[in-house]
Image (cartoon, rainbow, N blue to C red; front, side, top):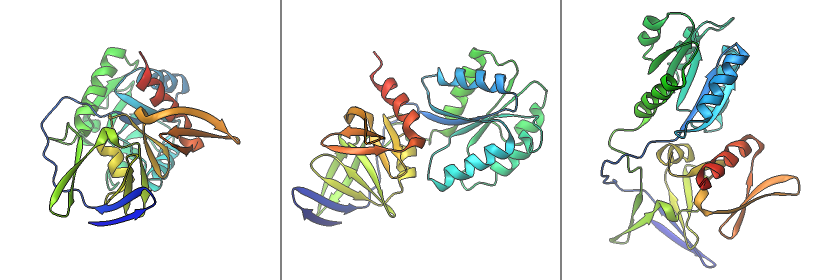
Length: 270
């Protein structure tokens, strides 16, 4: 651990020690991609997914090639993708071929196939979480989301880093997740801003985003993950969207504006 004081802010470089967790019932908020060449069916599926409180964000693509491009871009940007709702029969790169390519990713998202045709055998050979027949019924989709949520949840991590134990010169300090206003990427580390201190943790922002999924944190920018509970204002400033988080103003990228708005609405919905 290395500590450095700059003004009234203390920087501490730490490596999280092993976390003890008690199993709970908190589900991860899901980030998914829906792929279908039939635009009406895709729109309906995306609409239904966005109504599910377990789903944080829904992206869409109208063909396999576009979906593959989007996923590669997400990986490059360090964004999390938990699942892909994938039509089986599409022109060009079809759903089964795309699924095989996805299986080669370092950390592939889980698959839910959606089709008007009976391709269940091939789907489950590709280790699909579920298989939905068109037209998709809302109650059946809800079950698929439940299975997806269970599939992506790390075993035994339901409390999901509620506290971060930090060793400080022979004593252990516990940083409460709820006290973190926002996290900021810093090379191979993440800066956790708590308002009165900044803790430098050896972890990627994408990994932290996965571990804190469902805890009210939302990606506002490629380099920042914001705790929605600490957001006091969202506004336009000089042609861009910004968030007021504690005493700081943080930019929101165009790419993330919609999901930030959705998370804030969900967070403060009565």
